[in-house]
Image (tube, rainbow, N blue to C red; front, side, top):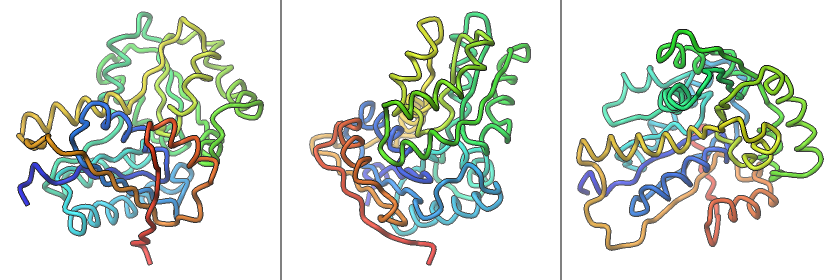
Length: 274
């Protein structure tokens, strides 16, 4: 098969990375997507980063050699922190991570350079976003908050309601008190909660979705190296695969399908770790 006709591979610890897939659908509607969610090992956030890197390497091997993808998007901030540099050096195809483009966007749009990041424990403790932002502006005033409960809520299909609002208020209060002016949603699960997070933070705070910045980077890079699909007359084909189907809630399937704008959201189980 001609390289440009191959699919783009995405990987995440669960269904959160579908927010990245959504942005790629919008920006590159002609491209085929193969999505792999490692629900068997969800969540990645609290896990040792060396272990996360092992999972990521195995999934990328599967996407490249079994599914023949032309590029891989690590649609997970924790996995990007743990493995991006390692896998970019190991594999020859383009591999994209979540952090750099969003950090650049935050510095570009932040009026007072009071920038906050919310993410999993792994992402926040790795300092990946903080270090990336400081490379663009060494004087930026940075704040970070780990929000692990958000991952659980989204995986359960809970995007709003009293429990979600209460959790968000608790996590975001320190950032509101610090009067930040931009907030990076540093976990791919968090854009599902964007309406509520925006309401709590207020009009003076700009939310930055790394998924959108990632999609722009993928389009620009694949255009430059001539890997975008040339024949765009047919419909794109999207495949959604997980390592443990039993861990996807019915509620997520219902809400996630609407969020993603898909008529049907079906997952196939392929446990590549057994």
